[in-house]
Image 1 (tube, one colour):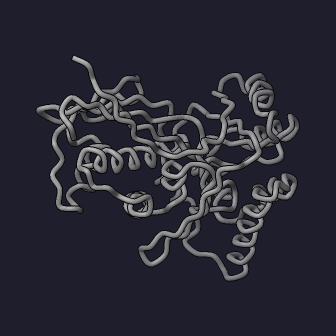
Image 2 (spheres, helix red, strand yellow):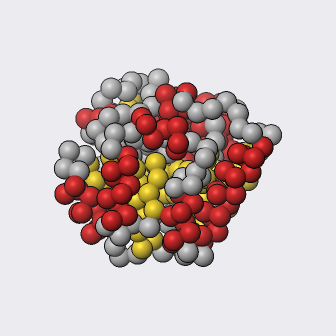
Image 3 (cartoon, one colour):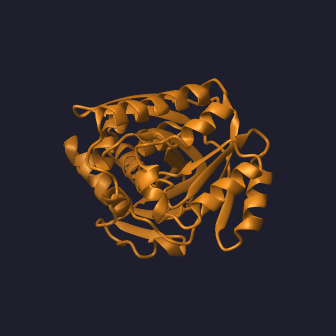
Length: 304
């Protein structure tokens, strides 16, 4: 990294599954993880918001571990840096906080280690860290992503021109992905797998063709994870009903939950969020937009 240069790394949050698109469909949203990186004599990570204060302040920080491990894979040792971290992404709420941190770590390694990684290489590395490509793919590429991770290879397509709005209802409780996965069945019958996959396939086709009624129907037809996770989410049924009563064409768990993401036609997101906030005043409700672009690295010279 050139002396006296500062890198700004910005990574969008993500929602995943969108109902039946389990571990394969993701969507980037406009909440961001931002890193300000400067060369230093030692590794130092500082948090600019309270929720991140609990993490290590040295190279043991998760983002640092991802960066150092990524560089090592390519035979590089990274010069130490001072990293200031700010995040709009709530932790353990189903909005891809860990996936955004993984992408940030890979971008950090790529920038200061001069690795010159391609998007595909970054996606492969991130998927190996995360275990599935949906959240990391959305944070890396932006927009709607559909991915497949088989035999240690990732294939993914992304779509940026999408014409719907979002509102998210974020309960105060945290729900860790590990705990949410423990309630899922270990296997499905062939008939169940066919039905569940068909719902996921039709969801993607409906979103891309702007058939909102079908998209909403498929979100509520999921067999892979929502029937097992909904009981873990306080007021899920009430939130879903309120969303649809106020113009949403569909609602689904965001990732593993507990956040519930509500989908509505373009231009209706702000009104939907306001209506849901009135009905659920003890929860955080946000109007979100789709982030059409994924992670980016900007280099600014520091004067003086």
